[in-house]
Structures are given as C-alpha cells and as structure tokens.
Length: 273
Length: 184
Image 1 (tube, rainbow over the protein chains, first blue to last red):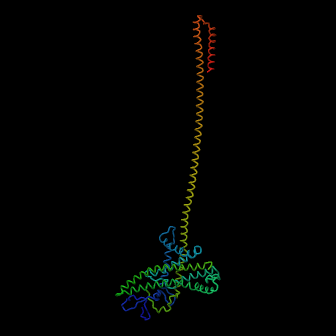
Image 2: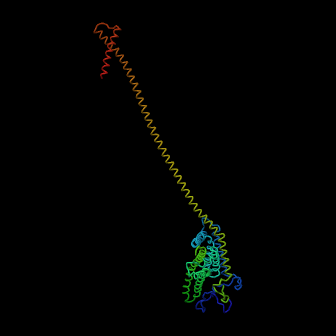
Image 3: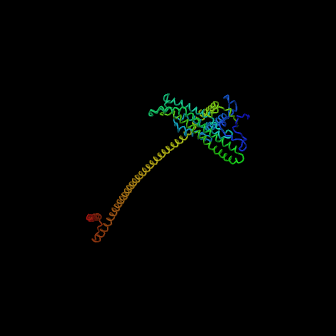
C-alpha cells in the first residue's frame, strides 16, 4: 500500500491491542472494493460484488437447472428440495397475497426474486466470499426498480389513467375534507416512499448485519494479545452467534422483499381501493 | 480477496447512492435468473406437477372404476344367486307335485289290482261252489236213493224215476235253503 497519509486501511492484518495501534473499526470503507478490472472513476469496471452477483446467478440457475431440467413425476432428492422452495414461494407467498387466479402469472417473477435475493444475502456467510451483495444499494435498487415498473404499469393498465391515479392516492369520497391531505400522503407513500423503502429495507438489514459480523470478527483478531485473549473468545462466540442470526435474517429479508413485491402487485390489481 | 480501499478514492461515498455499473450488473444477473426460471425451468416443473396431480387423480379414478365394477359384479352375483334359489324352489315344488302324483297313481294301481284279485277270487269261489254243489247233488241223490231203496225194498234204480224224484227233492231243499237265506 502507498504511504499516503490520507490512506486508512480497512483492515490491518497485523494490528493487535497493546501493540500501539488503534481499533480498525469497520465502516463505510468496508463496503467499497477496488475494481478487479477497470477503473473506479471511469464507470467501466468489475469488482468483487459484481463477481459474487454473477457467481450467485450461476449457482441459482445451476441449482434449478439440475433440479428442474428433466423433472420426474416421482422426484429425486434435489428435485424435492427445489420443489419445496418453489412451492413455498408459490403457495406461501404469491397465492396467499395475490390469490391463485391472478397470482399465477407472477409466480416466476417472485420465485426468481426470492432465490436471487436469498442467494445474494447468503454470500455474507459463505467462506472466502463473506460479503452480502445486497448490502450494496445498487442491487436491491435494481430489483426494487423492476418491481416498481411492473407495479406502476400494472396499476395504470388495470384501472386506466384516472383510475390508476385514484388507486395510488387512495381516493375515497367518504373522507370529505381530509381527502386532499390523504391523497398527498398516499401519493408520496405509494409512488415515492414505498419503492425506496423496499430497496433500503433489504440493503440496510444486510449492511447492518455485515457490519456487526465485521465488528466482532475484527475485534476477535484485534484483542488477540495479552489479557485481551479472554475477550477475544467472547467476541468470537459473538461471531458464531451473529453468523447463525444472519442466516436467519437473510432468509427473512428475502421473504419480506418478495412479500412486499406481492402486496404492491396485489394493490395494483385490487378492484376497489 | 481483501482489497483495501483508500477513503480518498470514495469521496462521494453515500451508501444510498447506487453506482451505475453495479445497478447494471444487478439488473443483468436478475434477468438471467428470471429468464432461465420463467422460460424453461418453471414451466418444466409445472408440467410435471400437473402430471403428478393427474397421476394421483387418475389413480383415484381407477379405484373408483374398480369399485363400481366390483359393485356391479356383486349385484350380478346376487341376482344369479336369487335366480338359483328360485329355480331350486321351483324344482322342489315340481318334485313334490310329481311325488304326490306318483303316490296317487300307485294307490290307484294298487286299488285296481286288489279289485282284480278279489274279483278273480270270487269267480274261483263261485266255480268251486258250483262244482261242489253238482258233486254233492249227485252224491246226496245216490245216497238218498240207496237209502230209500233199502227202506222201501224195491229198487228204485229205474233211472227215469230216480232222476225225477231226486230233482224234486233237491228243489225242495234248495227252496228251503233260499228261504233260510232270505230270512237271515
């Protein structure tokens, strides 16, 4: 590394407590990667998160390819597992929220979303990768944008322009005088806030989870000196606990993301709002 | 694997600001996953799930068909059994009737034979009686003539007289006998 005084290392591997160096706390810099290929300034580059995103894509497609390429009426083990996952999203989320008749069309989208998000989250605890792709806002944003575009086009296709506007603003005559206020709030909520929070909810959860994991992992290493060794043990237990917790959160966030996507589409399809 | 990034290189590092290249890659990666799943793999599994559903329902339908067939066979069997019972009853009835007819016939035959035998007996008895009466008449006539001859001392062996006298006597006897019979 260069000796530039403005340079702060994300993680100095030889730094321990009582050896004269401060705690290298994780921060925003932990979520920035130098491009493997290209230049960060030119906007044409390839970095670790992109590699993981594409690798994750290969894994998902490979898994479902192996399971569903030649499916059998009497399923093998792999097909059974994949079917369980598929069925969970189809019946457990799409049919539940949108309904069987209207929802069938959106099953492939929701299944793809669920497993894509889950895989990208899972990278967080897969050794060597150990970075949740979804903790980079661009990935959740891309997914939320896709859902948003489908949601909006569906709203106006189902209800027409005026009807779609009423649908998005929660138009209801019986509200009387407060109707304009409600419409403004609903418009903001539906059109601007919802897609934003949809992406940020996933991003922030993964961001926070990864930060926590980093914190305890770095601490376990940093404390590994003198009396600090005892505390390093505690910190390492926390690493294990947080890893299990992350495993849970990753699945939950994938579920929530798809659940919200379904509820948006259900709202767009609803006859009366 | 651990690229160390200088803070200076990320002056615009707002974590909520999506960098375009990542946005594009994310979009692309998702579209690839969606394309494979939506175009090939999920239709595949849906087809198989449908086949499975049909196979299960087909099994149920088959079982239903078998049940219906079994019921119809049972029905047939019962009908046949009832028919057989009916037939047996009919045959028994016939046999009983036939038996009764045979008994009646036998009885009539027996009666007829008995009567025949009885009639034959009567005829025989009558003939025997007649023969005995003729023999007796001859013997009695002879004895009476002999006795009378001895008593009278004259020979009454003149055939003509003898015959007349005996006949007269015997007619008298027969008359008295028939009178006695009539009185009885």
